Length: 260
Image: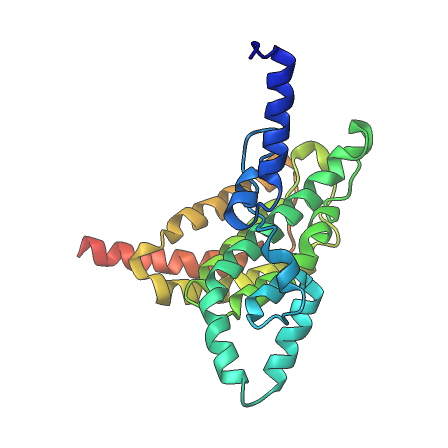
């Protein structure tokens, strides 16, 4: 018997490999599902045809096809059912803290973008002529979000709402080259001031000495001085007056306690 050629070996190997694939099922076939990168596929090919006649019994499998709008509709339907409402609220409350932090971060970015866009979307020359009231008008729609966060029935809602509101106040003040008057911003200022005073009291009750309110007081006083000195503005009302007065009263009272 003669020596086989290399071509005979190749053909023999191909035939053997082809034969071994026939009838491969389950783990063996799954193991052969290897991509170009060498990573095995997670698909159980043998099980797929068998599953087509089986209805979904695990509700979690439905989550993949539920769009955000459908999820919202589902939640509304569940809350409309008085028998299910207590259980739904219990589960929902457990998720609210994470949702609150995500929501406030999202609103913060939107407000910052809305204010910064006043200068960045137009030329520098035009930016100098922007009315000072344009900045509070850009962020005032988000006051409703502050109220929503503040009313959430979770620990820390007052702090989250306060910090979001403080961001809106900051963004309502432009740099010196982007303003020329203070007309038309009194509605925002007075509303923000009233809301901040309420939230400050809540934070004082909930956080006690852990809240360093003096830092907020100094920031508000510095911002007012900067607007008066740099922008030459003369407010006809005490800017953030209720909040500043409240924080100053706490600072004075705490100072007396510390000295006694």
